[in-house]
Length: 133
Image (cartoon, rainbow, N blue to C red):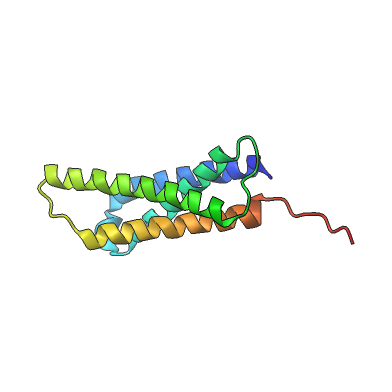
């Protein structure tokens, strides 16, 4: 397993999301592009999934099993729901109406990003076994 490569991609993605966020604050992309939020949640789910893959593989590489996939997906789901609860509280404070369809969409895109993180881990980070033929 190439943990160094995973860490580099994790840090790059973190800075990329941060730069996109800063540009959004300046250019109001979330108001101009109705799908902007979906892309950000997808990238965030990807990042959170990669983060948990990195943390959970500190001692041993994570096996490419359904159990591991579900563990990463569950962890991303928990973070996504906590984020949506935070947004819900902020909506109450700012008297903005709650949009359950948007929250559901956000969590779905978090989970899609999580699935991609596991696929990325399986195809890019895990070593290719040597051909012994």
